[in-house]
Image (cartoon, helix red, strand yellow):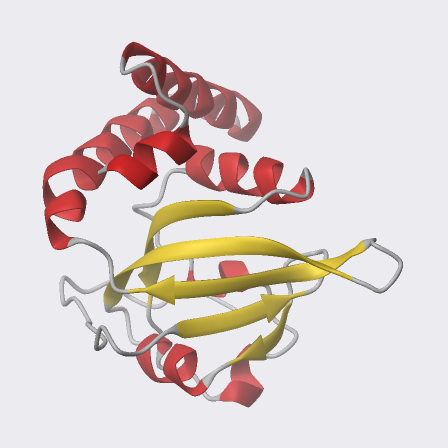
Length: 173
């Protein structure tokens, strides 16, 4: 599936709404609520079975997703600010809470994400500049693995200077 043309138009959803999705262990969507479908601009049938990266916006550093995946694969929850792409090329920001889902035997069987409206002040004054910095570092490398490693290093070093982890950082802005 090719990426739609990007627009500069931001979409918003009410603070009273929560975007919910579930994925399997590979990140393929197994559930998407009505709010997810409405804000992302997809019908449920269009997203089920598709990779959650379907809504990945190119302004999102790969390093942030590496931190997210490393955390949930370690059976921990994470909070993150994420810029997503809607079907028509618009974008929307979310404050995501992603958790592993466990089966009766305690094994991880998938992932669950609830997304709320983010703090606008955090997006504009903190997240956008940080993500732009990390994305610029990633863009300096043609090799995907090198780009990811450089982006993670930039993110880690920036947060280390603040003496916080990504999770602590997100929870305090």
